[in-house]
Image 1 (spheres, helix red, strand yellow):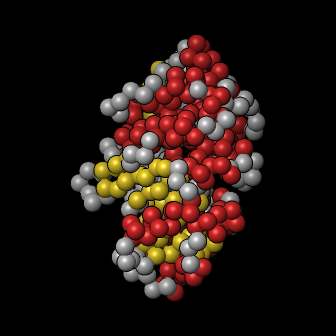
Image 2 (tube, one colour):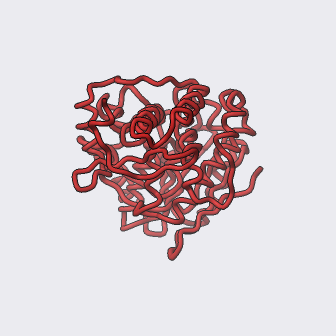
Length: 357
């Protein structure tokens, strides 16, 4: 399956394609340069990805900026490093920044592209499962502050996204499972995404869990395409998270708190989202928004992919403190996305007393 996914943001020139294939990585450079034409560019690439694929990608060394890996690297200093390099190379508004790596590289390079000369072309080349199904598409770009994750950012759509499944061959198990965290999220929010096609994603993932865990490329291709179709359905209706797009934060408010309380050292983003989903299912059941049967079915489904709930990992007061630092807090109220029926979720104010009974 080589058909592209189209992203068409209404009332904007933000129309772009998501190209998904399994071609040799050696072909990727020419594919991207054919897209750029004669325009100048800079490649911002993850250090880990460069070590693994630098020779295969074969970009000119003077066109490359290597950035260290890890959430802590998504900071103002590396952002300025990218800006300085763009200035040094005298890139113009018609030039492109090519981001090759996971979510950290995509977010940070994307933010640099959105602000340099008030916006230059951006090519996203995600190399992790998580960035394939989430951060490379939809236009959220950001850097972290010392206090909070993604606090400084913008909405800036890429010019194109190139997904090559071969990058997933070298993902370690932890990072692969991190990507599954975002994939499983879509199974719980599918019907609220208002997509024209009902993929019955929960059932598909449930039946094919073993093949997905074994990284069968046919099934990875399928889950990436479905996840992206659902995300695109949401983003094209609500680009800047004024309403519908908030459902994509399912599991994230508590998940972000876990990341920050551990200084981004104990959990990958996807793992934190998984524990955020466990938490919010328990919360929804306590509020009688869902019945015990749906909660247990959801837990059994998540468990099938190698996860296990870890309730009461941290002091509730610390968790609540970090939840209040989330950028989605509105009028001093924590907002959370809760399950209300299979495939359906909604936004509501968070009641910390009921959540931690």
